[in-house]
Amino acid sequence: MKVMAPSPNLLPPEGVNGLAQPAASGQDFQSLLGQMVNEVQKLHQDSDQKVTGTLMGKEEIHEAMLALEKASLGLKLILQVRNKLIDAYTELSRMSM
Image 1: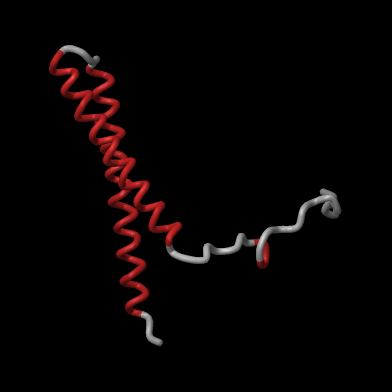
Image 2: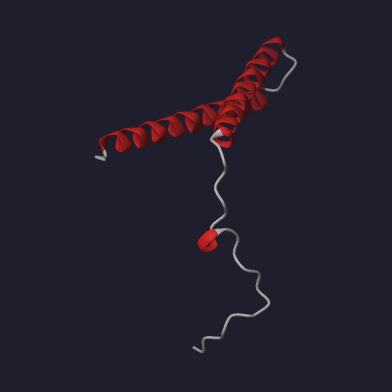
């Protein structure tokens, strides 16, 4: 197998050592978490509406089940993110300075 030299036409990597520059403040992460929570809340509201519509005979049951599963998966994702954040905080608090 012959190894070829990289093409000189490649663009240089962004940031330092090929990594993108970090955000200047924690607002981006905070807004990302807020958006995630809002999306999960919307999924739960949508699933509630679909279940109510199914009980009233206006919606199909498979649509309600899909909405319920989406809401459940969203909640599980938020809980896993929370657990990882707690684990990271615990690990940082154990570090000696």
